[in-house]
Length: 210
Length: 198
Image (cartoon, rainbow over all chains, first blue to last red):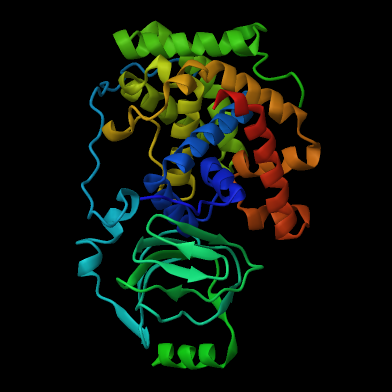
């Protein structure tokens, strides 16, 4: 797996700071699990957090002494839940049974989705697009991050394969088209509902309401 | 922001580098021999900073104190997973505090694993980065201190106040794009300061 599209630097910094809205953070974590380069960047950025916390004026503790009983130390590294091979481990429990067990919701010709339940800000969903089909052009009311889990797509900003992320902000309108081969399945987080443009998009929205 | 990192540790004014060396040593003693005296020092040095962090994130003093205590007790429980060669002790404590804050103050899932929490991630850092952990943190501090205030401000609002890009834009009355570009420039400067250590 060769990853060529990474998280935006402002996204990475907010992610390491713990300030990225929840849905975006879920996709950032999923990408980071697949991408050694972004893992190294996050480690560097956690160092920035340490430096900033160490500059804070200390707030004295009311209970300055240690608790009388300390908890038992754990010497065992946790084992990750073995996820479906297609689903990165941070989001594995949101996609129980893996991508082949997803109950898709039909949205329009060649386009399906499945919203994923999530506490916190933003929307998270899986999106499936048949080869050669496009998702109607849409701009974003806020940030959107799309991670390819299977298949591939292209849009005006490039070609995206498994592990790649399209990390686009509100200024970008785009029209992804799934490439030949497998259905393209992506994990998509958006800060705001998409703003769909044009006639086809309006038809698509009507379909969606049915 | 120049030159005032860790000035009041343990009542004295040791250099930041000395403090970090002491921190790593304390954590090593906790990890290797469950040394309660070493942990007490770590607790009393770091607890007040983590409490300050939690208060800046919006916790009241009592909650912040509880979260600071829980952060440090997590350090105690998990210290055996820490190895001195794998980077800054305090960076590890930051990641624990951050995840706890997301979990408790936001009631969201902290999506990020803690460094070295999982077996598979344990041996990931290349050797040259391992050796230069302290040097890296010194350079991060220097780069932060040199940021223009407008860039430093967005970084602090993100890390210390826990604000999203949109919330920072609203707080400062700036376009979202300006917030993100200031953050990217700050990132690139910190990155550049570490370049020859990569």
